[in-house]
Amino acid sequence: MIQYDKPVVFILVDAFRWDYLNPIDTPFLWNCAHSGLYVQKLITTSGFTQRSALFCGTFPNETGNFTMFSYDPAHSPFRFLRKMTPLLRFAQKFIDKRKRGSRRLNLWLRYQYIYPRASKYAVHPPTAEIPLYLLPDISITEDQKPIYEQHAFKVESIFDIFQRMRLTFLYFMFPVVNCQDDEVYEMVINHINNSKEETDIYFLQFSDSDLYVHKYGTESTMRRKVVGEIDRKIRDIWDIVERKVGKATLVIVGDHGMMNIEDYFDVATIIHSLAKSLGLKHGRDYFLFLDSTLARIWKLKDNSAISNFFEALKNDHEMLSRGKWLSPEIAKKYRIPYPDPKYGDLVWWASPGVLIYPDYFHGHWEQYRAMHGYEPSIDEMKGMAIIYGEQIVRRVFHEAHLIDLCPTICDLLGVPFPSSNKGVSLLSISR
Image 1 (cartoon, helix red, strand yellow):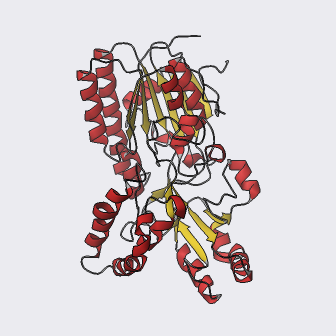
Image 2: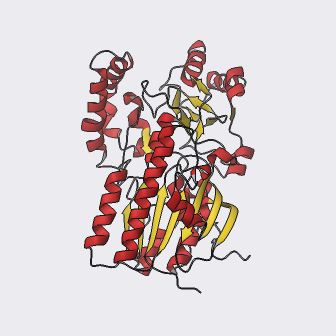
Image 3: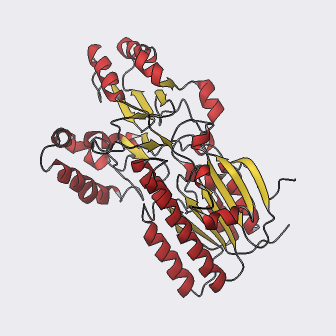
C-alpha cells in the first residue's frame, strides 16, 4: 500500500456545485483539479445530512440520518419547553403578525433563551424557524453529541477508526463553526503557525458558498465573488501548510450543488386547510414539519378521519403538480429511511426548482433564490472533489459518489474503512 503524505487537509466547501470551478473565479482550485485527482461531478446523498455520508461511507437508510430534524418528543432537546406550550403559542402568533418588536422577540427567545438551555441535551440544537410551540416534539439527528466523538453515529464512522488507530485530527467544521469562514481561516492558520504537535488530518469547512448562494442565486455576481474568496483562502492555507509542515495532501469536496428557485409553494396552507375541513387539528390529530423541499406528516391518531385526510392529500392536484409522495420504491432508489417514525408517515418531496415557502428553516422575511435537497441524480445537485499532492497521480473521473470520499480518506491515512462503508476508494480504482 502507498504511504501518502500527511497531514491530510480536508476542506468541505458547502454547496460548491461542480460547474462553479473555472480558471477565472477559482484559479487555485482549477490548477489543483488539473494536476491531481479530479471528480468532475460528485453525486450527493438524499436529504440534508451529508456529513453522515462523508464520515460513515454509506447512505441515509443505514446511518439513520436523513434530515436535520426529526419527530421524537421523548428525546427532544427542547422538551423542557413542554409546560410552556400555551405561552409559546401566544408568542408565535405575535411573531407571525410581524408587528413592531416581533423580530427582536423571536431572536431573543431562540438564541438567548431556548438555545442555551437546549444545549444541555444536545451539542447543537438550533431552533431554525420551527414554530416555538412545536419545538418540544422535535429532536436533532446528526448533532445529539459531537460528530467527531466515538459512537456519535448509529454505524461506525472514520472518527471511531481514528480513535482506535490513535490518529490525531482537528475539527473546524459545522457545528463547531457555523457560517464563519473568516474564523475558520484564522483558526487553522494560527494552529499551523503555532502548534508544535503533529496533526494527521485537518477537517475544515467553508460555508459562504451555501449561505450567499441561497440568498442571491447560482448565477449571481455574489456567487462568483464568494467562490473566488474561498479559492483565495484555500490557497493561503495550502501555502502555509507547505511552508510550515512540508509535504501534505489536500482534499477539497463540494458536498452537493444548488439550483435556482422557479416556484414558491405554500404547502402549509393546503395541508392545514384540508385538515380543518375534515375537523382535524394540528398537534392533536396530526403533526406537520416543513423542510425547504420536504413536507413530512405524522399521524397522532389512527382513525378514519386521518385515513381520509391522507388519501385526500395524496390526490391533491397542487401537491402532485409540484412534487411527489415518497413511496417504498423511491425510498429504495435513493436509499432513504422510509417508512421511519422519525421522518414521517407521509412525506412529500418537492420537484426541482420548487421551494416550500414559508417553511420551518427560514423566516417570512427570507425568500431564498436557490436551494438544494432535491433528487441527487440531477446535475444541479452534484458537487465536485479534488485530491492534490505530490503523490497523487493525475486522474479525472466524470462522476463518483459522496460516500466514496470516506474510504478515500482512509486510504490516504493508511487506516481501515468503517464497517458500514459502501463507498469505493478513488485511489484504488484501476484505470
